[in-house]
Image (cartoon, rainbow, N blue to C red; front, side, top):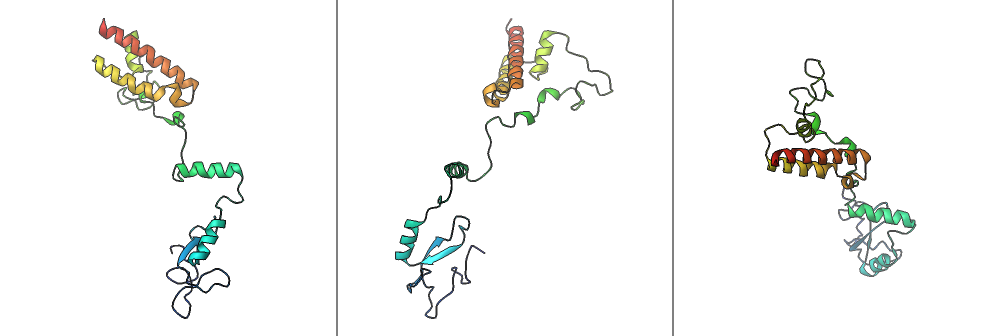
Length: 186
């Protein structure tokens, strides 16, 4: 079913002389040109002769009966090929936080060691900074810079709609980066 109406392969009933007549009232010419029936039924067609398809198209307005807001919404929906979309950083709260991974089989356990004991916190500022950057020693300047760039792109307030939690995380990452770089370049 490709949106045909009335039964023939082309979408209408054939006349006795072998062609589909124009759907315009009173016209007996061949209906060779299709035009959509309505905005709600774009895959159902009227079949008109050239003269009447021109008249129909000249008077047909897809946006007829819609408010300005509905027209604007329809145009915006068409700019993304009628697919759902969202603002950049719109799903920031659902992002996976890699800082919570990599602590020796303690998968997502919020600070608990695998045997149920409280995980040992980082002792020095450098160790804490490496944990914030989700890095393990030994590290190089290039590795630290690459990880910093990745985290900054993910947690930058502009990419997360000005989210305060992201802003705080961004500040934490920047301070950790400075701490590790000071240690490496000293």
